[in-house]
Image 1: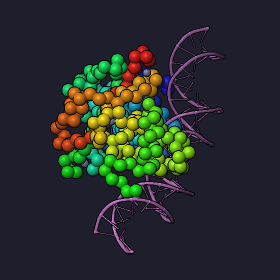
Image 2: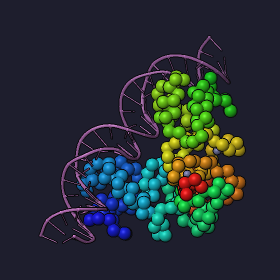
Image 3: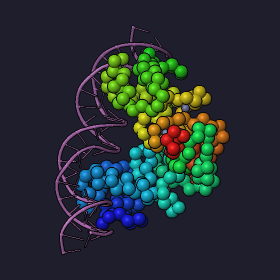
Length: 131
Length: 131
DNA sequence: TTTAATATGTTATATTATAACATTGTTATA
DNA sequence: TATAACAATGTTATAATATAACATATTAAA
Ligand SMILES: [Zn+2]
Ligand SMILES: [Zn+2]
Ligand SMILES: [Zn+2]
Ligand SMILES: [Zn+2]
């Protein structure tokens, strides 16, 4: 069951399935609790699967919340350009898919001489309902 | 010693002093260890000071590293628009101060109806030295 | 000077994440 | 088919990050 390009291992599938069913970011230990019936009994099993899923872009980590969400953006096969909208009221998180924004940020340069190959952007505010 | 606009309490000063002397993001427990000689003995004392310093924009949290860095941007009195450049090689973190970028992001709108009042952006790559 | 608000001190514990090592399964190839 | 190399899994323990809860002290305002 070695890892081939594009194939997911058993544990990776279990974790991804569960995250995809949720429509919101999930905490690692909440995932762990819920996949225990599927045989994943300890944190490393979940964290390994998450690490790999994040690496291949199927899952993103919401850094400000230490939570994980399935990628909703089909073009996002590698997780190197991510943007999220986060409501401070209801905690709803949405992946922003905005070509202008991603183009602007992917092309961003400053005078530091630094070569950027990845970014993560988190916007905070209030959604319609929460205003 | 109640908090007045612009004044820092004793513990806040101690923590900020220490962070400002470092030229890199510091972990909360490393701060704790180093301010113990000044009398801050337990995590809550450091985390409270950090919370407040972040709130007033004197310190920013680098979310992807769970680390704290002093604000280098004098206009950044409220910490609602932050951008950082992070080297994956040497871990050097620099606060980006780029009016065009901040103007673009502060004005960003999408069709979600969400009203954004804060963002945090983290760029990753390799600095000159690390290439 | 009473009251309210803010800050501090302290202990314990919750939450998030990784180290380390043994075992099993898979692929490649000798 | 052996056997070696690698990838994935299972398992226990522990590290690292962060907060709850409550007592006390300090300050500002009424
Ligand atoms: Zn995505
Ligand atoms: Zn909301
Ligand atoms: Zn700043
Ligand atoms: Zn570097």
